[in-house]
Image (cartoon, rainbow over all chains, first blue to last red; front, side, top):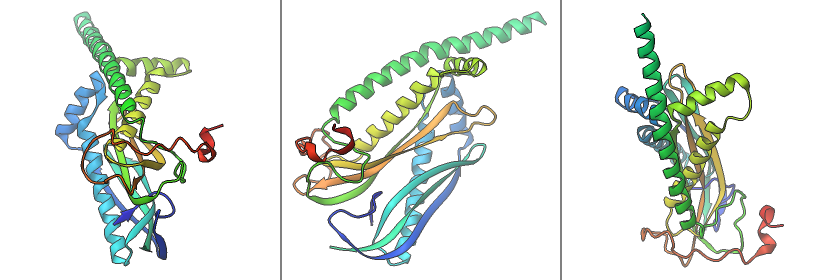
Length: 105
Length: 179
């Protein structure tokens, strides 16, 4: 499925619009990763466990959005936006949304 | 009683020392790495506008992103806490965010070998909460639309210096940056 974060798809023509589609996932870290992150917090630097965790959940949110778009009969999503919010201590929501469209060459 | 206090102070000093030395070393190393990789990817223009620079014939476009979670060290966190008392610029967190943003952009660029340009770059910052002490680590996501030229092969090949087209030769359309 084609995805862009601009309003069009370069080189293709949008022939129909299926409306807004979104995907979201709420994740929390697990104790082992949190322990490692606690240690890393003393030394500073990248928290690889968290990077992977958030990357995984973002992947899942995108997948959910694509599923929704496919259900609506779209073959592309334009104007995709990412957003993260922490709903509780230790839990983060990853939210992806965009506009499902049908494109033709 | 006073022994307990001494132990506590000693513990704090050890943490501060560890944070200071390892944090500084890690930051210097990270900055060096960032600068090296930024040089490497200089040939891949990345813009925050929706229009690509120059005239390119787009064959394919892909949504690309890069993200990083990065944490500040114990010493700097202490420094920032002190700063919060007096007010003013918190340099400890400035470098943290700067490193995170540049790293995220680099990862985004690395995720699309062979791209001609990345347009509409957007950044998203979130602080990762760890219980009561809030900041300390941030997550930065950089995302954009990678445009692939018709003559650059968009699959694998993995080389950073795959000669993206020379786009800077169109000063008329370079927009807000060129004056």
